[in-house]
Image 1 (cartoon, rainbow, N blue to C red):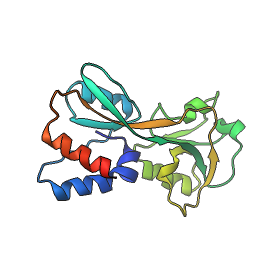
Image 2: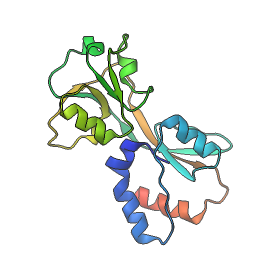
Image 3: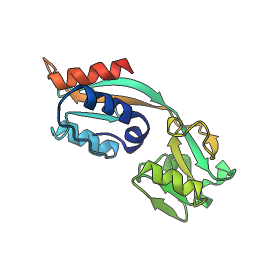
Length: 177
């Protein structure tokens, strides 16, 4: 299981290397962090990639990298009046809810980071995205975010005495990147 933005902007080259080097079936499921956590704890997923790092008798997490967030818009915005813009969010857990004391008059919920960015590019509203999801020549106006702690990206697996071969193989590819 994986977050949508990680799949689109980070994971695909890793997945391609794994698929080219090993003859195994691969199933990738996109979900939000709470659903990913439930999925790993319930044994639905072999591994998850999310912003939640958690250690227990059941699971083990490895920090992969830190994620920084920015507000994107088509034109310059007033960060003190975020509620006056249309919010384009992935879910009710979106960072915009943490940045504004007031709810927006209008929001659009889209479960695709690429669609969120496309709607912002068309001037429909504003969104919060990880900075690594923006290309170097993006055409967005970006605003740095203060007051939110940066998130880490973790790989979480079930805890094993002896890790299964497919997880060892995958970990090897991750460490090479």
